[in-house]
Amino acid sequence: MTSPASRPVPPAAANPLNLRGAVDLSSLKQRPAPPAGGGSQPLAPGTGRDAGAPDGSAAAPLRVDVTEANFQELVDLSAQVPVVIALWAGYSPGSAQLVDVLEQIVESYEGRLVLGAADIEAFPQLAQAFQVQAVPTAVAVVKGQPVPLFQGGADEQQVRSLFDELLKVAAANGVTGRIGAGGSGAAEPAAPPLPPLHQKAFDAMTA
Image 1 (spheres, rainbow, N blue to C red):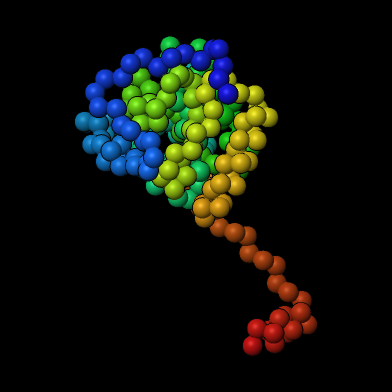
Image 2: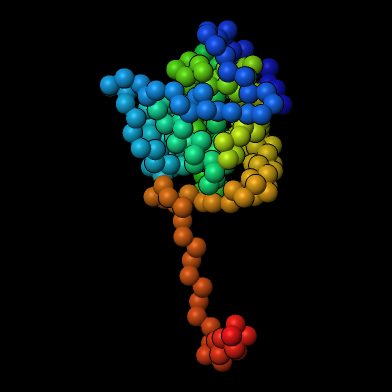
């Protein structure tokens, strides 16, 4: 779905990556980290970051800002939960609004999705890799493979429908994890103990 408010991506420089057919994100994943001063820090989806947020606000849990340094960690994380990538740019007035909407919706999925906000002006290689034609654009990564979502604006119901389908695709590929508040997979709650007679019957059946 394309919105008239979406803005074309400026021509990218140098060696665009081709993700047609068999998708390979290794060219992005293996890019060297930025020099000192912008070094890599461990990615912590449970804490979020505010660096580079389009509206300058603090990043909420389950939302991180995509950089060359942490992109590989996000791709690795996509083997556990789907990672939604919102590609935005400062010259696109709808970008900040879309990131805010996606952030709120992702939070409502309680750890089954993670949002990465990617500034294509700071990280143009990502726009090339995903063959983005206009911003804002949303794509997902599941087990290292990109899944197109939408371009331009989308209302909440449309986004939720897409995310529900995304989770089905992820589950079909064995991606059924959940990110906890601390940035790690949340443990399943312990089952309550069975009544003594039921436990005896269960033990007998097991034996």
